[in-house]
Every structure is written in structure tokens, then in C-alpha cells.
Image (cartoon, rainbow, N blue to C red):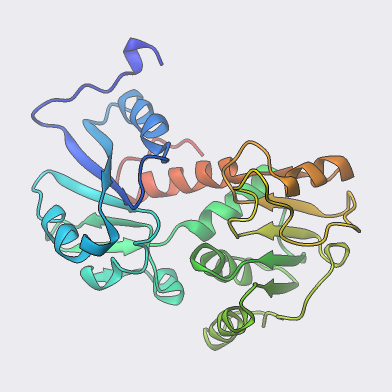
Length: 272
């Protein structure tokens, strides 16, 4: 990063906090802060390590910091922050979690969830139009839930949701159906050859010794693959490469999500 891209911290600088436990692994400040500086914003993103056992008392104090305009939430706080907010978006209500919050003009805090937006953006970065596709989603946790709701509203033809915890996938499918989505997800096991788009929304692939989150024996170039794990490559992405699939990893989702969160915070620069 050149000196011209370095953010300048002034007495007037506004703060955005990225909160998690742990927090040392996050790379968002490295990409956000040059972008904020280039956009002429007198604001910086700073990592804030809040211990999970001390979240309630700590976050209350953090949210009273007068020059703090927003928060980005990472694990394990996306659900726990909700009750601290005056209002949340419909999609955040559906998921039961937020990953960004901002102080409104009245001083109250409002939140939204952008994991689903990030996934849709990642798919479109591959040139994929979602309408009419058969989609297989692995993972029904926080990120998986947000992605599932976004996919269910995107015009896809069908959605299969599987999770190591079958009850969790069943609960997610039921919530999507109750929300009146255009499609009712299936929770039966599926083969990758049955879907046009395969999405991994689990942490499988983060570990050096991890395998793939699903059997990829019948994976062909007809299936596109999005793995939300933010490593340069994963066993699933390597399998997609060998099969000739269109594929992308977590960085594409992060890029789309970043643009949406910056816009939500009033710091957008028009870049995707």
C-alpha cells in the first residue's frame, strides 16, 4: 500500500469497529482502510477483541463511544448483538442475526445481515444468473441461513439444504417456508451432479487436513461451485478446478459483502 493510500487518523476521524472472539485473524482492516482513504472518508475500521464471556457488558460500553458510527460483527456475536439493536431488517429477522450495525440519525442502533448479499454477488462474479437453477447448499448455520433465505428469493428453481445436524437443516427449511418464500427447500441428501450450483457454507476446508464437505465423485463442469471459506483454495475448490467447473472462494463473497456494508454505513464508493 502506498503512502497516498494510508488512512490518516485525526481528531475528527469516525470509527467503525469489527468485533469478534478471536479477532486477530480478520483481514478486513487491510482492505477497508485504503478504500476508505481513497474514497475521501475520514473514517477507519479497527479490530475490537471482545471476549465472549464478557460480551454483554463490553458491547454496551463500546456502543456508547461517541465517534463510533458502526459495527461489523463476526463470530460468535452475530446473534447476540440483535437484542441490543432498536431495529433490524426483514432479512436479519428471518435469519435471527446481523453482521453489520450502524448508529442512526436519532442515535439508535439498527442492524442488517449481508451474508446472503455476499453469496449472490459471488455467484454473479462467475457470470451466473440464478433464475431457474437447482442449488445445493451445505450448512444451515448462521451464514448458511442467510444464504438460504437470499437464494430462496432469487428465482432459483429448487434448493437442497444439508447439514451435519439434520434438525438444523429441517428448522431452516421450515422457517423459509413459513416466511412465504417462492420455493420450499428440500432437506434430503443430494448428489452434486443433481445441482447447477453447489454452495459450501460450512467451515470445512479451513483446516489443513480437511476434506470436502460433500462427496464430489460425480462433480462435472455442469455444476458451478462457491465455497465461502476464505482460503485461497480448499479441497472443494481444487475438485472444482479439476472438473472444469466455474468456481470461486470466500474472497468473492467478502468483496460483494464489503461493498454492501460500506453502502449501508454511508461509506460506499460505487465499487462492487
